[in-house]
Each structure stands twice: as structure tokens, then as C-alpha cells.
Length: 124
Image (tube, rainbow, N blue to C red; front, top):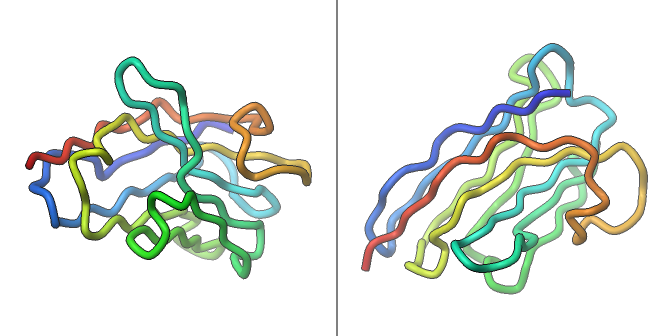
């Protein structure tokens, strides 16, 4: 599965962005999906995840209440990350990832497929 992210950009603190993730060549159905981010000089960190049906979501404490993950398994076949009240510390490359097996949603090593990443920059 190839994943393609879009929606990153430059935004002022307090602003919003919506990231999208679309699979190339097949449907997302059955895959558990996650968003991770990596800032320069830092390790990749978990942001949010969603189960295959979309009725369970998981968030890092740092984004809880500000970010929302969702998915459309139907016609749009897309995973979203709505990011509100953005802070400068949210600046990073954001990656979409997919996993087929159960287990931890929080560990990036559990994911099988990754997108190329999209840059999010929040200015103060």
C-alpha cells in the first residue's frame, strides 16, 4: 500500500490545518491507521490513530482536545487529521501510516506502510 499525504503548510499559532492521507491503488478498508510526526533532531512520535471501522480513536496527550482523526472508508477512502489551535511545538513532518495487525497503536514500529510525509510549520 502506498500512502499519500497532503494538506501541510505554514500557519500562524492558533490556526488550523487538515491533513489527508489517501492510499494509492487500493482501499483502506481493514487497515488500522495512524499519524506520527517528527521534528528536526527529535524521534518520531505518535500523534493519533483510528481503528479500521472508525469508532475508536487514540491521541497523544499533547494533542488531545485539539486534533481529531477520522476516516472515510467509502467513496473518498481517506483518512483525515484535523488540527486546531496549532502551536509552534506542533511544527514537524507529519506521516500517515497503516497497520494490518492488532497490537499497540502508539508504536511506530507496529506499522507496515508509510507515506512520504507532509511538512507542518506553525509560526509564533
